[in-house]
Image (cartoon, rainbow, N blue to C red; front, side, top):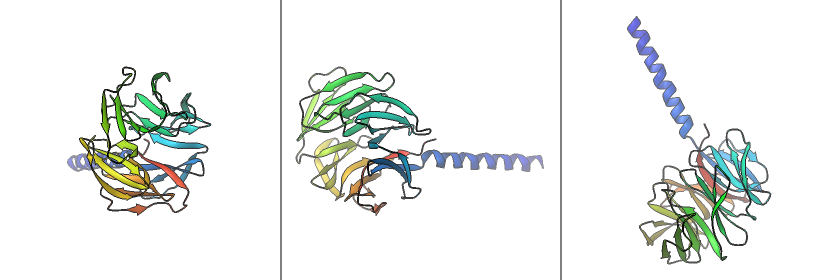
Length: 260
């Protein structure tokens, strides 16, 4: 009898562990509709208004925070409580990125300047001006920030570099670049289409699907995109395409793990 009780207890622990794992790794999609931030499951279910007046969202890698634009500045909210954590003095940002280690955030400023901030202090640690910036992303090791300027990729170490450590030329003038969590691929848009290029050779690229504003899932397998104002998902070769919304006014999607 004692053995049966022990086995039953072990089985219960296994079930609890599986349940916790599923909850912690469930994917969530954030997007903007009518100037407000919404949340839904990766299958399009459980749609919910999250934060009125928040746009251009970017979730932290650990799923604890959401970075977005509110009242013309960049702000961070706790996702579990929706309490404001910190604001940053940007000027009408329209592109955000978060370093994978959660230490820094970046924003494309309205006048065309990329600014990098320390999350814990809120202090600006780096800035690159000159206008014409068309997006940015952090390298998957969080060391570099890469700017898109027309057809050029400039790689900087924030708070260190005045001139780029490395410059690469893209063949088609992609914009809105974002790197996969494993660092192998870069997603981008070009004239209403989403492409994937290999990080090791940005001249090696392929068309994924019609759409703009691609963002990666944490497992590197799926993209969420804006296709004609509707949020959709597909794999990196355009397969398994699924439209999740049909309003025609949705934009700026991003993936995140479901908050714990």
